Amino acid sequence: MKNSTEEKKAYERMKPGAITAQGFLGDDDRGLADIVAADEEAFRRHALVFEVVAEELERLRDAGGRGLGEAITVEGKWLVQAGDARGVLPCPWGDGVFHKNAIEVERVETGSRVAYSDLSIHMLRAHHFCQGKGHSFRLEPETLKKLFG
Image 1 (cartoon, rainbow, N blue to C red):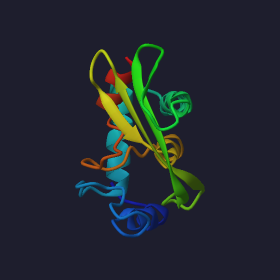
Image 2 (image 1 turned 135 degrees about the vertical axis):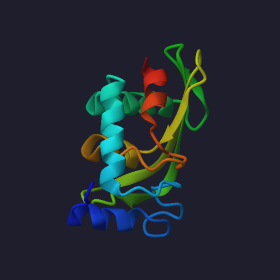
Image 3 (image 1 turned 180 degrees about the horizontal axis):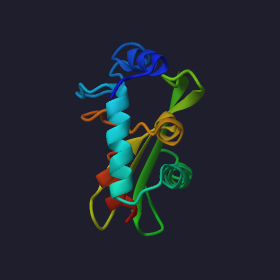
Image 4 (image 1 turned 120 degrees about the horizontal axis):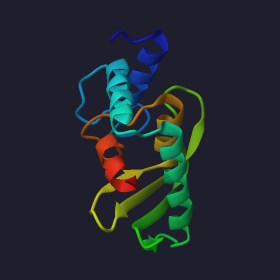
């Protein structure tokens, strides 16, 4: 799939060293439009809705924040650890700046886990970008399905 000019610029900002040391692409060598199209298809296949998943990730982030950096159990289903870092990160698409943080969520009964940030939530909701395969903050659709059922 062909990338738009906007996607080409965002893709360049996703490379390691542009915004973050590790970038946003992991070891994925596909173009941005192809990554997004594949993730949109996976969301459809798993009956996931980007907005609903983003809201759940925010809800768990907020609940985990009550642990003050320590992992806590939320609703008896999830083990959540939310940590803050100093600073902010801009979205590679240039449409916002987001608090620098890291949240880890594990579904206790299945062991499915994801790590994400406020920027991850924004990119999922606004751009349908789950991050590249192999990235530590990738929101893999299959894992999200296992996490939320």
